[in-house]
Every structure is written in structure tokens, then in C-alpha cells.
Image (cartoon, rainbow, N blue to C red; front, side, top):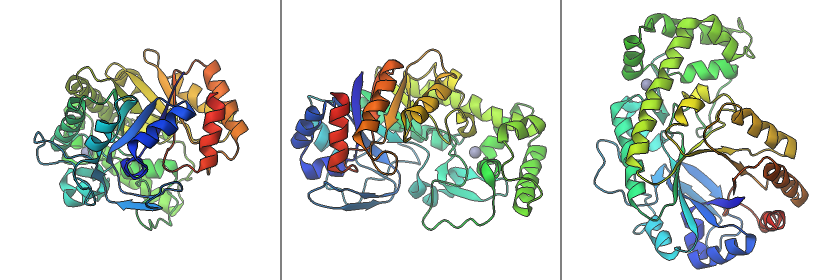
Length: 379
Ligand SMILES: [Zn+2]
């Protein structure tokens, strides 16, 4: 079993890349999943010698090259030079993975509302770029190509290279006091931009009927005329026009991933599964079986609290895939896990399930005792 940890560039640079390498070697970890292009965030860094918190809009921590079109990553304003290059230059004896955010980018969305997801009501959902839009597809291809050409990366892992689900990941002070439920969140985030509508119409889907049905169902949920716990899978079977509209998105993403596999060249690609929940990746437009032809592995962040719940999540996703490995991510700290025995017990279960690689979330966010639990569990 291989072990990796997600990490932010500021935490590694503040500590000193060589110190990080020594620390990780002591823990038994041989790989860093380094945030290269990242969403808006505030972090809390308990062990960082220079800062306890970091605020940023969606940013890249490298200087993008000149291959981009209308959409390009925005380098973090507080960065002097190129943090990814600074780190990769100093770390050549540990494997490095690019941890890469795709469509969840509220900075680009706010500046370019025409390329964002569009709700059934016509709102621009600025937290998510729509992967049906040609400019977004060009952006994602350029991003993967740019990172693949930085030969330092052993893998590129893709997060939210899909139709970002629902109402967002929690905007500042998000205020939602109507009970939408999973179905309502899903339908509210279902994109009806001109490109999504165009793809569906080309596949002979009645787009107007699909959109009207989505709008009326959300209104029914808000008014309490439809139970908020209505299962979306079952509801879609009863509303085949919306089901057909949803299915077209999967075809679009399969084509996009075929392109991403081409531009990544020989650098292996991984995709983060389990969003919005394990086994319901279709809600983000992802057909796990078909995308598997274009990526080398999946990684399931299973930030659960027990061996049983981690293994349940693992088996739920594993049942949908046959051809490629499924890696797992664990959160050995608050709020998921509060003791070392649980980390060891989960790792034991994953080893028995033949999981080839486990990544820990996240080197800079975890306090000292969590690192000790990791070390003990690996040993
Ligand atoms: Zn769209």
C-alpha cells in the first residue's frame, strides 16, 4: 500500500520543503498531493510556523503559461514568483501529484457569468463553471496540459472537473431557509445554459418540458407540496424528459475526459469520486464506468469516522467500476476521527480490501497528534 498526503503550498514553503520531506519520510509517507489550482478558502494551520490562517480567492499557485484562451487561472495575489515551481525544484526525492480544482472557481465565475452553470430559473451559479461551455472545456484542457508539461508531477488528480452539484459548497454566509432536499438542490444546480440546452436538443430531448418540470418541482418542494426527502433517482425515473436531459451531460463529460487523457500525455490522471455522495456521481454528470476508460484511477475521499463507514463508502463506489483502481482518502482528525486506534483500524480494513493507495487529508491542517496516529497506523 502506498501513502500520500494532501498539502497546501504555503504550509510547505513556510515550514521549508526539505523539513516537510523529512517529516513525511518519518511518518512513512512517500507522496504529496500538492494544491496547484485551488478554490476559495480559509484554512487553519495548527503547526505552521509563520501563519495560523490563509485566506484566498480561487487561485493558482503557479504562473500559468501562454496556452490559455478566454479563461485562465488567476495566480494568488500574495505569491511572489511561482510557489509550485519553488516546491517542485526542492523536492525531487518524493513523488508529487497535482491536486487540481477544475470547475469550482467562484473567482472566474464571478468575472465570467456567461460561462457558469445556469439554474432552471436562469440564475448564473457563479460557484461553478459549466463544462458544456467550449471556453470552459478549453480552460480545463489547457490546465491539465500546462500541469502535465511540468514534468515534476507523477500524477494529476482532478477535482470538480464535472457539473458542480447543487447550491454550491457554502458561499460566504449562505442563506437558504427553504427546504430543498437532495432532489431540490440537484434540480436547482441542473444547468440550462445555452450549451447544455443545445446538447440536449441535439439528442432529441424536449428541453422546454425538462426545464418546466425542474422549475415546477422546485416550486413544489419550496411550498411543501412534495416531500423534501423525495429520492432523486426514483423521481427521475418518473420524469423521463428530465432523466434524458441529465443523461446527455454524461456524454459531454465522456468526450471531455477523452480530450483530457490526450493532453495529459503519459502523466496518469485520477478523478475524485464520492461527490455529492458515494454512488451518486451521476448527479455531477459522471458515469463512472465510461469515464474509467479515460482516467487511470479514481480516488474516494472517505472522511468517515469508523472502519465500517469508510469500507461501506468504498464498496458502494467500487461496485460501479471494474477496470481501474480505487484509491481512498482519509481524514485522521477533527471532525471525523479523534483517536489513533480508529486510524489503524481503518487502514487495516483498507489493506484487507486491497486498496493500493491511501491519501491523508491534509498535512498542514492536521495537529501533531494526528500525524502521530498516521505514523503509528502505517507502521
Ligand atoms: Zn451548462
